[in-house]
Each structure stands twice: as structure tokens, then as C-alpha cells.
Amino acid sequence: MAYGQTPTGAGQPLPTAAQGVPEPKAQPLEQKGVRSAEIPDVPEEPPEDEFAPAAVEMDVSQESPLLQVLYKATRETKEKEVLARLDEAKALIQSGTDLKATDPQGRTALHWAVFGSSYATKSSVTVAYEEIADAMIQRGIDINHEDIYQDTALDYLLYSPSFEMQTLLMENGATSGFLVATFRFFDQMQMVSPAANVPKAVSLSRRADLSPGATLSVRLLTPVYSDRSRTGDPIEGVVTYPLCKDGEKLACKDGELLLAPGTHVNGTILFATKAPDKYSRPRLVLDFSNVLHQDGQISALYARVLDVDNARETVRNNEILGIIQPHAPKKASLVFAGLSAANPFAGYAIKGISTVYGLSIRREILFPSGTDLQIQIVRPSMLKQKEAWPGFPQITMDDDLGQIVKNAPLRTTATNKTPSDLTNLIFVGSKQKVTSAFTESHWIEADDLGVKAALKVAQATMRNTGYTSAPVSTLLLNGQPPDLVFQKSLNTFAKRHHIRIWKLKRTYKGQDVWIGAATHDIATENGRGYTKWTHRIDPHVDRERDWIQSDLLFSGTAIGYADIERPQAPKRASNATGDDIVTDGKITVLDLGTSKDRDQQGPALAPRPAEKATK
Image 1 (cartoon, one colour):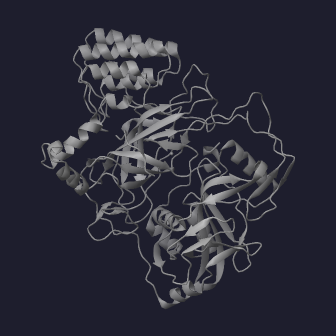
Image 2 (cartoon, rainbow, N blue to C red; image 1 turned 90 degrees about the horizontal axis):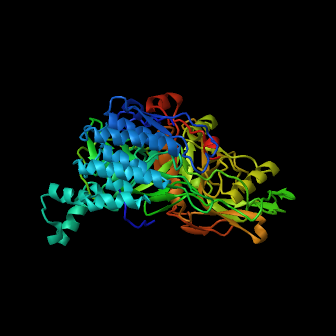
Image 3 (cartoon, one colour; image 1 turned 30 degrees about the vertical axis):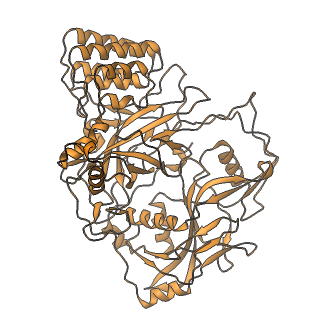
């Protein structure tokens, strides 16, 4: 697990996509006695004194009676039913039930008592859980037993407001598995006392396979919720970008690959709670704890969440914080006196807005399967295995391809002929292949500009919600609007990946050639009176180029790539709205292959139901 660090910077499981990517033989959650509950896409909020139904149900029928009862208590939604289950647990403890029993995740009854107490909102429930924990401790339960995620009972209380339970454990000598992990690593490296030789300890940490500071791109394979996930629920993800000894790189040097795309990782929900009132935020803490190898071996992973891609939520100190409910003294409705999309490059002109405060929105955290995360390693550990991986296939550069790149237009323009985004991607394949490559990789075609779209934009912007097919401003290439526009977002209109694509007149090896200009929207900005919105882009546009490149290669919809220098490309520029652009000038060529090539490449990731997931 990961905590105590200051940040620097979703459903059905998805299959691994690209051929040659290791397919770990990790047991799916469904085969571990865990399944996702049937939950409506946009459920009604439960009463404030009740919990929402749990998103995950585990099969505990083979566990000890005490574990079964404590588990069932965590799945109850009303105070009366929870207390009834806890009375059963007290009776079992008094009768001398076995306290050494563990569940398939290695949790003891003390773990489960802590899980329930961590999100309890009623003092009667908190006290009952504390009494149960105290009784088990007095009877000699192993207070520092670690589960398969290297977490002791105390670790699950770090983000919890349960002062009573934390104090009880600490007074009885509880320790943290996360803190012990550092000493375990140095013991493995045969350094008994790191405190006695700090320089050597730092040197050894840097020599670890998974060393502190390294970042890892992970895509969720299980959905997570602030209101419907429970402390202790299992989570699983897949690595989407190669991790090399010197960090995340599209291609590693020989012998320097640590984790290949397609490697599975798992962990648990460290804490989850809905917002108690409209002035507070929902909270969610994920704990990625293990790397799952092909042969069934497991390597420890100690990481914190740095960022959730295109999310409206913020991440602070490993804790994902939801949004605060907009509110006003009285109910008001959103009135649009007039709508237009008059400025084709500056954004969307929305006039006559009276107010949006008081609107009812779902603000609980929901990250569906397919949500991309950036995590950072915070404790050193060694890998038990390093799988072989040939890398993403590369295209051989030839004269024809070189001429296409040399003659390709460098920049787009706004409709008023102001220079704007740089072109940075070329695709080889038919229109159907381009469309399939993006849609199979979770991308959505953007809506056309118009009154209906402008209304959706206004609602999404002011309510801080998603609009997964939102239009983009019109940019021209050689005087022509784009043939295709795709975007990828999560739950906010303010952040999205997007690309405009034009067909070139040239062909390559009998295939159509397309050129794209990709940027990453990272925020929305408004003009005077909140009557016009524009997007602000990440100035380092190469990140978006590389992100799209790796996304299509990982999903198997692109079968090869080449990064090609363009000496004539400007290294610094600005787009039509005045945002800075910083680039190395390279352009990436992606081969989308024939249908047969794609079939051999392996199954592509299934697209997530984006519209429903962001309501």
C-alpha cells in the first residue's frame, strides 16, 4: 500500500490487446469468489442515514462463521441490520470461535472489523466494532497479520475518521505493513540496519527493480465507486505502457525492460466513502499492491495514485477527492436565452445564463473499467520475474514514407487563417481502419457544432460533468475541415484527449494516408460574464502524440510505428487561442494494417459505455 507521500505532479474485465504482450495467467476476480453486483448506471442516492448497496459481492460460504458474519455486516446498508450482525459476531467471539482463520485474501476477523468501522457514520456502529476488535485482541488475535496486499489492519485505518479503532490498535502494538516493507527490502538486500548507513540505503533503493519515484500507467479492469465500493474490495488493473529501468519508454534498451504492457496488477480499496453532505467531498483511496506474473508468482508493489486521466476529481496524498455539490440559497433553473457557436476556434458562445447553482448532479466518484491511472512507486521492491517481450513492432523507414512525411503540411489554421495546432500523427489505412482503430480503443467521434451541442457544452461545463462526444472547434488543413474527429474523456468536459484527422492525396503501399493534429485539453476557461468557453491545452503536445501512439499499439489496432524527425517543424509556437506549444518536431506514423494483420495481432480492448459512465 502507499501513503504519507506528497504528490509531485472500470464492469467486465478487458482482455490484453496486442500480440506479443504477455498475458498474465492471473485468476479473474470472478474466479476468486468475487463478482460485481448488478447496479444501475445512474442509481438513486440512498437516504443520508443509509449506505448505498455494495458494488462487489464475495463468496464467503466456505469461511469461518465469524468471518461470514463480519463480512455480511459490511454489506448491510442500515444501522439496525449492521448492529444485529455485530451482535452475532460478539456471541461467536464469546463462544471461543477460531480467530486464526483467514479468507482467500489473507484477511483475519480483525481486518473485517476494521473494514466495517472505517466508513461507519453512526457512533453506535463504531463503538460496536471497537468492542469486537478489543475482544479479539484480548483473546490473542494476530494484530499485525498482513493480507495478500501487504496490509495489516492498521493500514486500512490511515484514511479513516475512526479515531477509536486507530487508538485501540496502536495502544496494543499495531504496526503498518507499508512501513515494514522498507526494512523487508533492506533485509532482502542483506543490509541489516539502513539507519546506520543512510548513503548505502539510498543507493540500494535506487538499485531496486521497482524503485521509488518510478511511474506506471495502469488501466482499471474493475470499476470503483466512492459510495458503492467497500474498504477491502479487490481491484485489478493492467499496465499499458512499458516500464524500463530508466522510466516509462515506448521502447526499452536491451535487458532494461521491467514491466511489459499487458502485465496485470492487483490491489484493494483502502478507503471509500460517499459525501456526507453537500459541503463535503466523496473520497476514494486505491492501493495497488502486487504485480502478477505469468507463472503465478507475485511481486510486491508499493505505489500511490498520482493522477486519474481526464477526471474531474483531484488526487491529494494518494486520496481521490470528488467534487463539492454546487449550491445556492434557493432553487434555480438553468435558462439559456440564446445559444450559438459563433466563434469557430475560440470556443462556444453561450449567452443569457442566469444560474446553474442548485442543479442536482451525481457527484459520487465512479471510475468505470477502462479508466486510466498514473501511479508512482514509493517503496523499493524486487521483481520475482521479468517476462520477455519483443516490444511494439516498428515500421522500416523507406524513401516513399520519407517523401510523405517531408511533404506533409506542418500546421493547421483557424477559419480566420490564424496558424494553430501542429500536425503530429500519420495513419496508414482505409477510413474504416482509422475509425475502427479509435473506436476499438475507447475513442468517441465528436458531435458537429450546433445549438444542441452548444447546450450540452454549457451544461457539462457549468455542472462539471462529462460530455463524451462534445464537438471541437473547427480547424483547417490546406483550407479543408477535418474528415474525422475523435476524442476520449472520462467524466468532465474540461479534460479530454482529442485529434482532428485529414485524408492526404498520397498513398503508401496501396493504402490511404491520413494526417492528424492531436492535443490534450486540460482545463476550460471562460470569458467575461461566463458567456464563452475555451479549452486550454497541455503545451507539451508530444505527450498527446505519444499517448495516442501507445494507446493504439496497446489495443492492437495499430500494428507498427515509426517516429520520424521533421527538421522544418517549429519547436515552439502557439495555437489560434494563444496557448503555447512546445514540441520536438517529430511526427509518428502508425500502420493500421490489414484486417488479417489485426486478427493476428490479438483482440482489441472493448470500448467502455462512456455516455452512461459519466452521468
